[in-house]
Length: 292
Image (cartoon, rainbow, N blue to C red; front, side):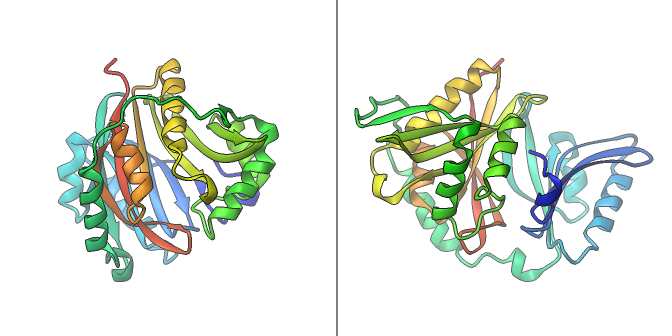
């Protein structure tokens, strides 16, 4: 997902070429963070890490996290980074390690960690429900198209006071669809009442399941499970090997849906993004869709 000029207040994707390194970087001012999605370097990681330290000198950013390959994890740890989670199979079957650094103590400190642990314990005690159930006759499920962008934006605007990306903007929703993000929706009486998307990384054959919501009046019907399963089927058709999702650690329902569908818990990212009305901790859930 790449921002357009009028989205710059949210984030900007950049590729930076140094003397002996390359960075694929997301400057995310809305969430006050820098995110490195990919990198390469020659020799050792010193120049790369020095450049990241320079970038974090900008007071707009209080968190940096890098999706690190296994062979580089100890090098980053030796420079003060901490492991927050593991993206299983992220690099075309190889794990990526989420290594984070903070420049602000309030950003580093979680306000709800123990409560989130209790929610996680309740989720992990549930029984798996991996199979797709029959959708109630009053609901229908389909892939969304560009003409749905207005209704989808309105839906996201209703539910979220704040959101890490501008999903309440119809032009933005249409833009990410053009960029390759796949949306599926559930309709009731011709109205969209639940939605979820997959942001696809074709190079490394992974996808993030995200933008998940169901209107409060329609919760309890298992609609999100249905959407996630349909998205998985779509991803397999596209030769995607692994899927992951970041879920609000304070949300029992979304974490439960992922766990029951066979996603494994692989860490918690502290105050990772601004969602609802504050910076929230996000649980990382991963699933290997295909071994090949």
